[in-house]
Length: 146
Image 1 (tube, rainbow, N blue to C red):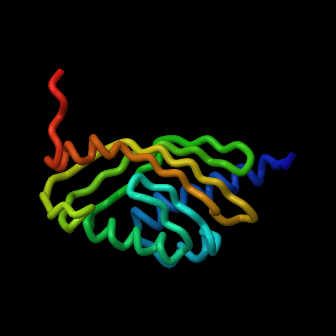
Image 2: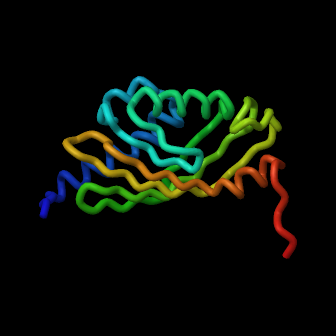
């Protein structure tokens, strides 16, 4: 069983927060090589991204579709090698996304992210945004009748 010091758990939490705060919101995509392991995997609703190249390509596509995108970390909890974060995502749909032409509508949804860190690098992330809420706000799907 691995042991983790308080300092390493705090460092893991700081590292995990760099993705939404620095890479996504501030568009510092060059940090991908610094914070992700070479063979890192991101599990996304649209499919897995494997390796830094695919992860970068996913960020590029998403930021092209939502040029004003921002991700605000609302809270995080770290234990051992894993960090859980609740993140609010915001943006305006100005480019193609998942085959959907731009709607120029804004969205704001919650996102849950679990990040696993090994040897000071992100090795795996599970990302679960409120896709239905996002697509509803973009006018792509309707709300179910209550």
